[in-house]
Structures are given as C-alpha cells and as structure tokens.
Image 1: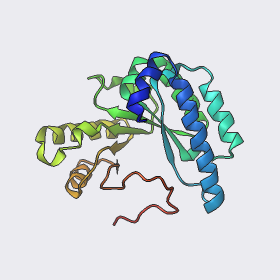
Image 2 (image 1 turned 90 degrees about the vertical axis):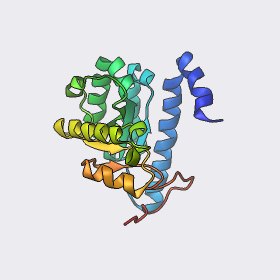
Image 3 (image 1 turned 135 degrees about the vertical axis):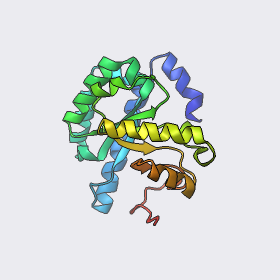
Image 4 (image 1 turned 135 degrees about the horizontal axis):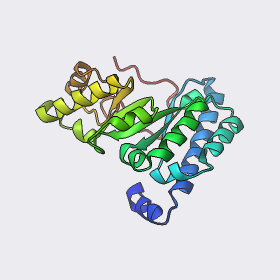
Length: 206
C-alpha cells in the first residue's frame, strides 16, 4: 500500500519513529550490501525522517550504533526533515541535527519555502542542504512568480552558506532556469526516475 494510506494513521498513533527505524535499518543493510558487492563507500543515501522522530531521545544513539554495526561511512548518510517539522520542533531539531552532524552525517531541510515566512531560524539549524519545494519548480518555465521565488530561495541558501537542491525537475528548460538561479543540485524525472535496482554507477547524463 502507498505511504499516504498508512502514514496518517502512523502519525496519529505516534508510530512514525518505529517506521523511521524500519526504513533506516533496511537502508543501512542495503548500503552495506552495495558497498560489499561493488567495493564502494562514496554512495550517498538520503533518508527522510518524521517530525515525531526528532523528539525520540534514543534516535541519535540508535543511528550511531547502526553506523558502527553496519560499518558504514557516516559521510554517505544524509537525513532529511521537512521545514515545518523542524520549525515546529526547533529546539529538538537543533539538538538532533547537532548530534547527527557530530557523527559525520549530513542533514537536509526538506520542503524549503513552504513553512515560516521568516528564515531567521536557519541561523539555528546547522543543515548542509535546503531542498526547494517542488511546488515552486513544477511549472517553473511558465510561471514567472515561481522563478522569482526560486531565485530568492537560492539567494537565501547562498547567504546562509547552505547548498540548495530543487525537487520535481522534469525538463531541460527547468534545469537551465535553476542553473541561472545558482541552485546547486536538482532531482526529478529529468535527472532520473525511481528504480527498484541499485545502479552500479550513476547515469552519465551529459
């Protein structure tokens, strides 16, 4: 069943921390297998976390122990949490992010631009990446307002010394606009579609 069918119920019954642990455990296993089969340790994997997990006092210790158990390079792990969840749990988010980064992992702020109108909280969140929400990117070539918003969000990222990622990139024209706006990275169907198989090498797009 699709995530949107069970995640609301999991959130209502405060089960998302357990779901997140399941996702992390299986990701760590797959990453260890991938590294063993292909002799690689530079494959970076992003893992989305629920806002509820930010309040789990044992989660940082679990991640640290898992990294040691599966013999993973912490630098290959990037954890993501939505902007709204981070701002809502600002103190928990800051403490959690600091613990995760002290292990050597990276952190990303997802759905950037859809939450608070003030970006002052970025001073208190030591994230590596901010991900510009896909709602601003989907119709970028034909929407001049979104072009202004994306450029502004990119400038905010640059001002706070963060790397930016644009979601929902589905055309070369969109990619060119993002490049002109100095967005660092892009994800979407134009870059690569989801696959059940883990590729040995990333596709050479250009």
